[in-house]
Image (cartoon, rainbow, N blue to C red; front, side, top):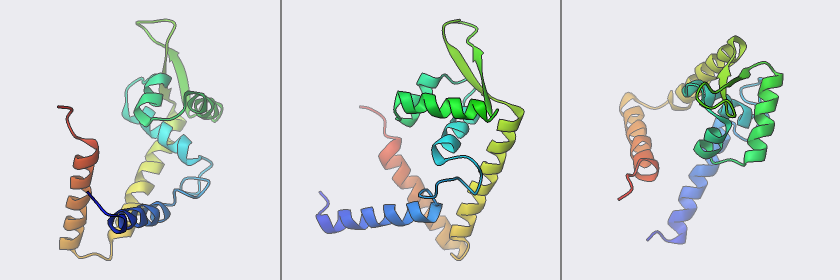
Length: 146
């Protein structure tokens, strides 16, 4: 079991990484999108015809808040709602052409951001950093239920 000093080091990393990624900024990469809008836009881009409730579950965010963000994305003409072909009571979310362009821009800037973060590391340090992140992700988020 980790002691408080070790937990403090993890918390310090979390705080520094949040700052490095710019998550505390109101807008993502100087766009007119908030971070939650950007994250939901990304999830819609990653999943073919995802439903709002699937977004709630996958991103673990409040249903009402998700609904408001989806409405904002729809008003910005980045997404559209289409009826589910299997269940007419349900809707699926898809990116518009404008939404695809916004997503691609955010994706490129996200990659650039990570490259800028690690550019001063040697090749071996970059690989070590990658392996550490991959391992942490595996330990925390990819565990199989036994």
